[in-house]
Image 1 (cartoon, helix red, strand yellow):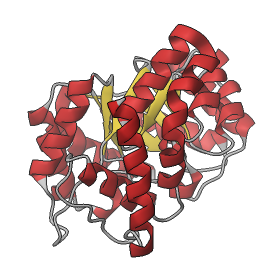
Image 2 (cartoon, one colour):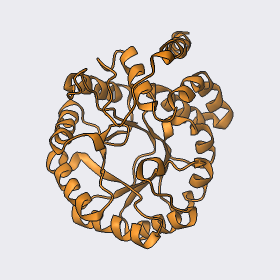
Image 3 (cartoon, helix red, strand yellow):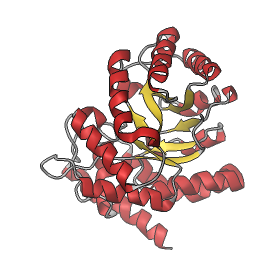
Length: 297
């Protein structure tokens, strides 16, 4: 099964000021995604701070999302080794059941044979296809482009790959090198490369930008009018896209933006994620005001 092209919303995990899960905000956030018509949700990914959650908390997040909306879900796994990843996936499926249409698994080796075996074993054990996530910032693993292509080709021939999430810059050529394999390739990284990723054949966006409507508008405009139209509708958002995608504090910035939009009650992040520096709050407000003004016109 391949994922539907378009925009898949990557869900933040909200916390209250004591860093306890905030289920009310989570319910509101995923309800917003459903209301704007995203193709599905990506839950317990890097943006969802899954690695900072206990198994019980991960189950609570999944149960909250399952109960709140009817959207299909891609669920991320944090483990890089095969046995713990399979165990983690079993816990996911116990809660999410058929609503989990695919499991997102990070590339765990530069050796394509190791990665292919790892992902095939997870798919076989769970009965779910894999979204291959190439995100070296999170995994610590850098895989050469030809090696990743071999992995995706092997998984496609076995019918166990749902998509690729390309997050190893530069992403546009990485996407271009994979699209002939017949597997949808999504961009991430906050949408910072979305225009060029679409031009290189991406299936859409799977990322956590605080205005997912902008990602939808860009993808729809590209389909209808090509690069020039997509650039026209996306350009007003690009300063905020760039501001959000700052190393080490991107998660905190996005959460604060979601708070400003009324979609979260608090912008708290758990270590090792870094909080928003107070010196940046005025800049954040300026960027948000610019986007909100544009959306009102």
